[in-house]
Amino acid sequence: MSAKQKVTTCLWFDDNAEEAMSFYVSIFKHSKVLGVSRFGDAGPGPNGSAMMCTFELAGQQFMALNGGPHFKFTEAISLFVTCDSQEEVDELWSKLISGGGAPSQCGWLKDRYGLSWQIIPSVLMELMSDRDPEKSKRVMEAMLRMVKIDIKGLKAAYG
Image (cartoon, rainbow, N blue to C red):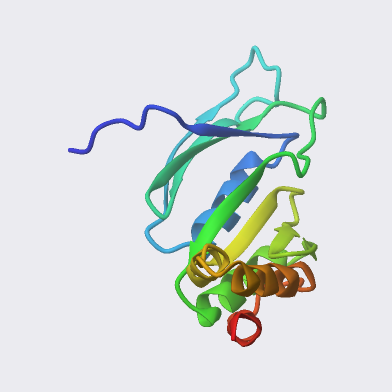
């Protein structure tokens, strides 16, 4: 039996937390629904509708709350996903923007629910932290021109 996670991210949705949870769980390996608690007769949501959803994405626990229209996601918070290959970047990128999501810059995107994600290959951090400041500068400049991160482009800039 694994220890309980001490800090868990709670995502606030208007009324589609269960739908979002199912979407996210379908995208990431080693992910699953942990539970759904539902509103009763006392509300405030419709009787039987999801109130709080708990789930795991790649082993990390999250909560999704149907809290109403009071708050929206902003880019001030994003989920950072480290990818091992260009294939993984491409797959996650495609799945997360499907159904109404939108690409942004520098590996950022918004999914159909408005949640911001950073889909970043691990090699980006390695190249940007090179001891040679010219190499890391070229990698940074290349990354700043990208929408979805392209590993071949990063390596070409690195030299």
